[in-house]
Image 1 (cartoon, rainbow, N blue to C red):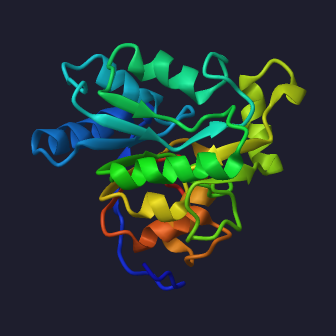
Image 2: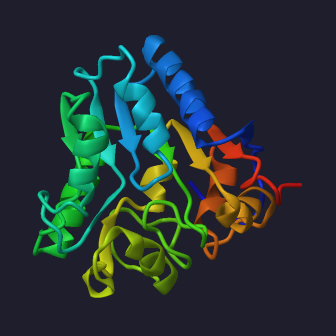
Length: 245
């Protein structure tokens, strides 16, 4: 896909009261797509935003044992057993209760950066993502694709910005324990997903959501490229939607 700074499509926007209602809406959409046979591979996100969706999945009768999941990212330097790793997060919030046929997450302990990125790109190539779940950072990042990241990037090792590191400090006992690098699925790979659901909650996301939807398409707001995806649903609470036109 050739990316320009022109808007192409209008996202479908669903406004909800809070994250709990947003999780239900996202689950209903996902469940309907699965019932239609449209979803074999799910792209998954971490952080606080998707937790309400995962809670809905866990308490449902949905069987994911024949599905494949591919996560967006993982911190560099953390093992699967580390309580702050995204492997651990996914097990705690979803996989222990609802196992998939196969789940893929970048290897945070991989010592060969190029080989790990190539491996993960191959995983995505062999398992095209039908439905990708996303959150958005306060600086407009999706996955760990920080401002300035090329829209043509595939899996890559990312130096996290100070704002992202600051936002992550609450998950760690000591500031010096916060990872400063991560492996992330690239924007080019995210854009190949057939459908995307992005959730955003709270007044801290007002600026990012406004720029994503109504601003120009620019690498300074990585999520703005979603204006050029053919099938994006934005689930947003009133606080995060306050800046929308």
